[in-house]
Structure formats: C-alpha cells, structure tokens
Image (cartoon, rainbow, N blue to C red; front, side, top):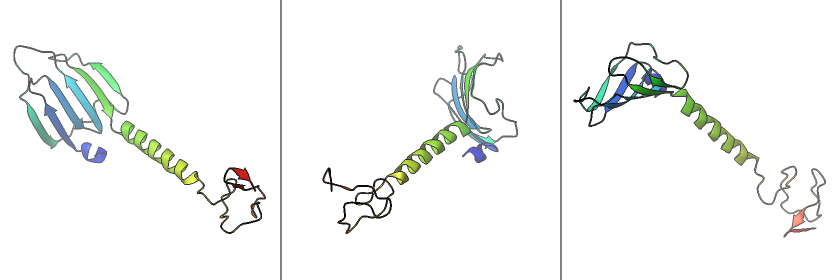
Length: 134
C-alpha cells in the first residue's frame, strides 16, 4: 500500500464536502476545511495518479496550512503504523518462540521424556514433578 501510494492517490470526501481523507505520497492525510455556505468539494471517492512530491515528508504533521479555505490537517506517514505493526509482531513471535514446552527442562529446554533420575542430563537442574522436586 505504501509503495502504491507513492504513485497513486485515493481520496474520500464526506457528505458536507468539508472533510477529506486521502492516502497519497506515502501518507494518510486528513483535511478538514472550515465550513462555508456551500461544500468546497462534492462528496465521494477520487482516484488517480500523483506526480506531486510528498507534502509533509517522513514526519507526523498537523496544523493549518494557511491556504484558501484554511484547512486543518493531520498527515501520518504510512511507515509509522507499519513500523509499529512490525515491531509488535516481531516481539510476540520472539516471546512465543522462547516459551519452553511442558516435558522439557525449564532451564535449558532439553526434552525430558522418559527421564526418571530427577535431574536434567543436559544441565543438571532438578526437575519438578507435579509442583514438587523429584
């Protein structure tokens, strides 16, 4: 989606024509135009190619542009939610892989199937059976 948004845009305007949500130039852009006697733009979807450079770069930006209609805006670069998603997914995956399954030594992960000695043959840790040390 991020790569496609560098070349294409998708915009939706609400019923009043004063609020627009766009995905373009690698960012999610929300514009809120000051209300006037009539809508600035007709409602609905717009699609097309963009040749304009990113308006707000790689940072989260909000404020007023000071242009005609004086829109308020928020610009969220799409890499931010992508980075958040990747970091959280990698963290959950890493924590899940570190979990030692039942029947294995909780210190080194050695499979203790059939072990009756009460010690892990790999690291020497005492093995607990039903909550009590063997």
